[in-house]
Length: 261
Image (cartoon, rainbow, N blue to C red; front, side, top):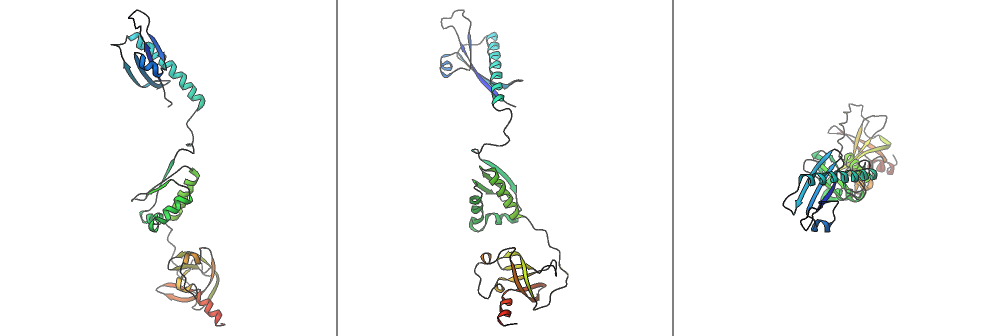
């Protein structure tokens, strides 16, 4: 509902005569100070929502108050008409100069992913998506604040993707590749601090093996994330099974090539 208000004033005969009291609509500061009444009335077309009355005289006649209320109603309706002409309905979105907030919830176990070591990740999100703030609660509630709604929605989608819990992969029952076999152009499906998981392709659908960081290259790798990316394709050699897991090596491919085998 649209609400408008108007202030009514009153001027009385200073000589105490029988002159008709003068009711003023939309009084100014000087009339407020020199007049006898300050009567503020607010509401809409259907009635009054609130009012406030100050007077400097001993009282008001009912007829005078009725006249003031009627003038206030006419003034209020005029203001409402002008307001409706300027803005027929509420804005679908706030102006770009007004800060906004978007809320989302992530699993408690994923709070660390959003914050990052020493707050590195959360600072990067704020900078990359031009946010004003990113508040993370202990229960996983996150408040994204900023001026650009598009950037805020992108930040929300980024956080949701980053914290999404992957569905458990079905167990692989076989067959398994023979030890010593080399597989070409295998896709890296995930990168971890300790190594990468690689898919062996259509011949062994659903089978993934681990290439430990020490088996990625003949030289020591200091930053695995800078060395290999998800989706990259690499050649690997099967080292066999260990503790129920398939072990692969990229370094062994180089060593086999160097030996001329």
